Length: 135
Picture: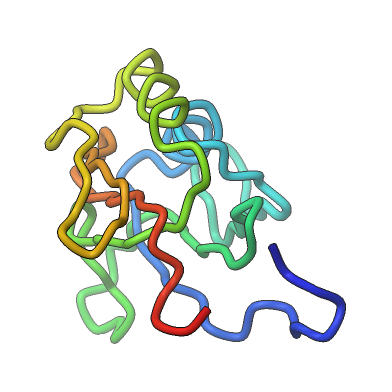
């Protein structure tokens, strides 16, 4: 949980999606991300921000056809570790929403309770209770 002295996110992992609007819906339904900004028209998403309830967030947008764009990330190449409190409930939610479960819930040798899933675009999401060293 973030206290009042913790600044808002300043590091934003980003990804591109073939169907960004569908991915936003999936990430919200399956994992619990909250869309706080979605800009674009029709099927194209120019910019979206999804917040994670425990703090932080991601940015995403639709793929671009410009091969000279230095930020032309390929869909399905993203991976993230996300801190979560109730791994069993999140795992059940993700599985019910159609996430491909890559690794069922397990406990690591350092005490984190984790699971891994893949979204419809091919990105990997590893959820765990480990909050980082000394946090």
